[in-house]
Length: 239
Image (tube, rainbow, N blue to C red):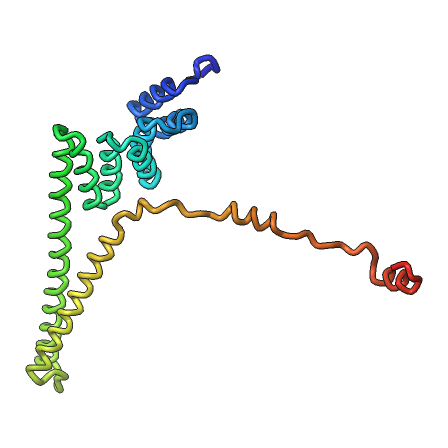
């Protein structure tokens, strides 16, 4: 592109960014929006558009930052909350996303897309809860079945069974069932903890810190004379 044809105003950069989004060129769109934001940092529409482009690039942290900035700059604009909800939903934070969708719906009550999004996400959250409960019960049942099988095998195929008392047999089976419950519960908790991890800030590689350390290092003072020369000058009274 010639220098004369390059977009130079905020509006031209926004239009160019929108065109890149339509063409699926989200990285280029981010670059155009970023350049426009440098020229007009309080333009909430630019932050909203860049949030969408970042979301398409799976850059959830950066997308959320722009969505929050959109809400901060224009808290009465429903689309800012919608952008935030979209990022939260993509990151697995369904409860937070429903809250953000609800805020948007309060500002735009007739928006059918918001209504459908809340309904869809509520169903997904219910399914997630049911799946978590199923995992716990399945693991519990597996533990119980394994415990019963071990008791039967021990009693039927060993000369001196370890578990001879009925109470010990029941206790052993229940213990394995409890172990299965713990495994299932841990699995579901780890799954819930993983939600929202994509919203964590990028890892600081510490390049700035290392450069700062280099600046803080005091250069070692070099001796002007060798030890022998220093002793000689000391004897001569020149030091």
